Image (cartoon, rainbow over all chains, first blue to last red; front, side, top):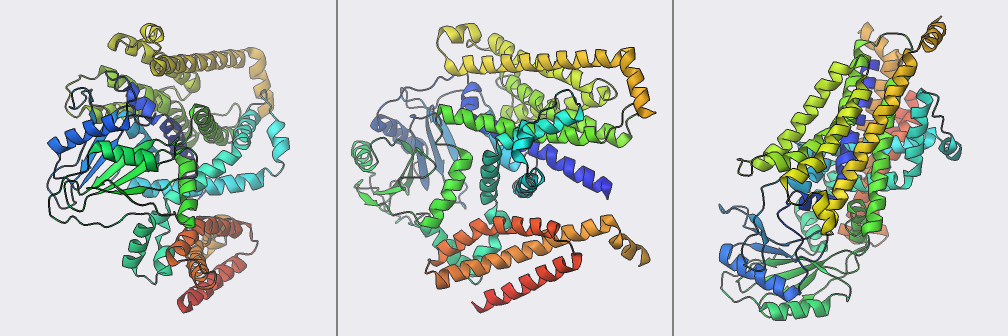
Length: 512
Length: 98
């Protein structure tokens, strides 16, 4: 049982660490997407009408018979390019698709096939290599465990302020505990918010019964009511052709109906080219509370049809979801989100290390189980960042015309992670942390170098051309490489000190 | 049989029992609280049916977490099982009648 407890606790730690790292990077998903498509630079912002015209021309030519069209104008960090996607009914044999559009030519923008930042972000909530649905279910359980851990953690550290100010860097194990407390308390409001809102995502998976039973098990009318609440109308196609409204009229009507400072996030056209065509407009969030609802326009006349008030319950739910996703966050708030995410990562990592350290006895050989815990600790805590660097480098190094290139980027990431475990196992007896830190430093350092040689957006050129995204990525990589090198230096020094004779007599006397 | 009852009386067995009570019975209990909450919000507070269902669902995980915390803080194992079972059964009955 103790065995089970040890392992259950640690497995939770490792998966939570994975969720924290990929989730924190998720606040930079669009940026990572752009980094992994170095052929493209952000499109210039033009009028809504120009974007809509280019998108509609493309969709009419390539997916005129689709059930729904989606158009995202290039006007936001989330949409550096004009993007279209289209969906057929579920029983149709035709394939759904999505493309970035070049407004100049009206055709697809060509770029390397890549998994991009979105794939990494999706791992945060549905893991990878698992049958669909299972990852999501597992993540729900881990989120609940995290929430319980937070609540019990608060109870355990009732003297929050005292714990907050005690840091004993010289004291070995106590230092890990202090660091754990420091990172948790400093970011406690964020952790509570992010975990509870994470649970809100899991309601339909793990708590469906409440709603279903409240409707006396009439699932059909529950679903209908929820859809109506969300403004998802069930407008069927009439089967009669009709011309879509001109984009000049539509864009004028849209701009007249949305708030002055609002930007169109995406436009959905249901049943295009049909008599019952409807156009829905979503705007970018400017805060966690959505000020404006989805607007509905008629597809033929382009007239505004309705903008229903959102219900209080749905508003409440959306505030949680919006706070979690942070899509509304500008650069400063986004930075705060990332820092809080990093503190959460640190909280989980230091917790796992403290857990392992606490069970060690000085001058006593590690048991098999302790060794295994150390291997997985090292392989996860340092191995995951290594593997993400490899993921980024594989984007540059894999052959451009490789079959299933995007999948291979992800495979490279997980192979590198596996390799980190092997290295951790090889070094576990003495100097694992030190050597893994050095490997991490080298890998981090390699990313800007590989980028320099494989694109024309290396650090020199990108800083010359004010290419903010690429300069920032390189600088972040180099500084993290420096930090891990520093860590390597500290651990090497510590090792030397431990090997000196005075220290070893101390250790002996401690045993005696 | 002896070994099973011996295990249950041991420290680990007690922890296992508590885990089962907290997570399984607690899950049932929190669902029944959620349903009663949804139905009474609709019936007595005049909130529309879908809204009431959504509000109750939003609080379901909070209720569940509080039950789990309680299950690990209450001293007597007997009180824990009695309390949770009674709560679940009563509230399921209330939910059925509402």
